[in-house]
Image 1 (cartoon, rainbow, N blue to C red):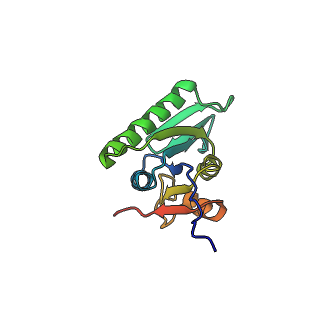
Image 2 (cartoon, rainbow, N blue to C red):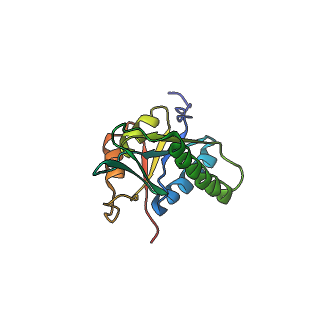
Image 3 (cartoon, rainbow, N blue to C red):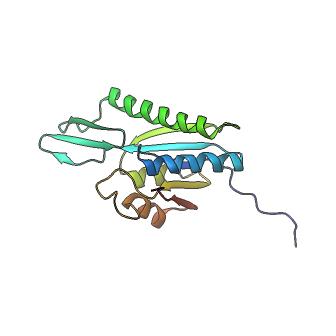
Length: 165
């Protein structure tokens, strides 16, 4: 019998963020866990899976509401940049709040259903962190639809961070 322990995955910690308080708590957890593990964080924001209203589609994002013509279905590049900048600013604020040692953070903003985007972005991750509720219409539920889907379909350990009330 060997005294060696299996190596824990050194992949990044992926955390979902949408600007909600629950997501902020999840990012704080991910940053602190990354400090303990000596790994990086990949903060993922999904957008563009919103509802259709008349002639335009609406992308829901916790920090803003973005509309674009349904004829193309494409989010204008400048609005993608706005979502990315707001997500980056929010995550950087939380990274400074957690303090040193500073964790390397990569921010990715992808179009799609939040749970699927998180699952796709976590293929090389060691841990997936989500808040218990997001900014969606069902946000009042004890466990949101994104966190429920992620828990049921993830290929890696998942932490669901409760919202402090």
